[in-house]
Length: 130
Image 1: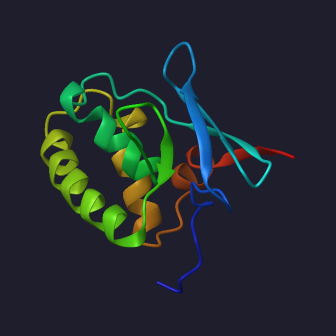
Image 2 (image 1 turned 45 degrees about the vertical axis):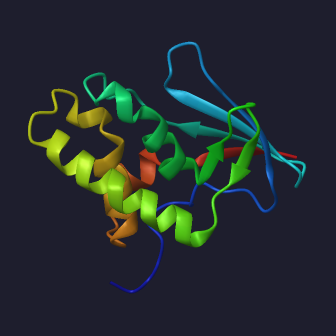
């Protein structure tokens, strides 16, 4: 592990103003006070436990949404706590997952562990618009 990222992290340089899912839930569009919009690839793992989808989105995007629909960035401690909880749930799910090619946890885990594998590099990233 040399510390080189396998892919770009999913983040903005300022507060996130909003986020929307694509029609088929394979992409998330976020926009930020840093005057950027980013398009995140989140291919569908259709059998991931539905009651944990919001946790998955929080960990992958580094944001949280309040009851009013306002999107805010997670601080490092919040993200680490959610990542730990999500990792536990995702590891259990991986044992029976029918959509491993679309499993976000597999791709993110490679990035978190600093592994350089083509599938992680190709499938995790963003498109930026300024």
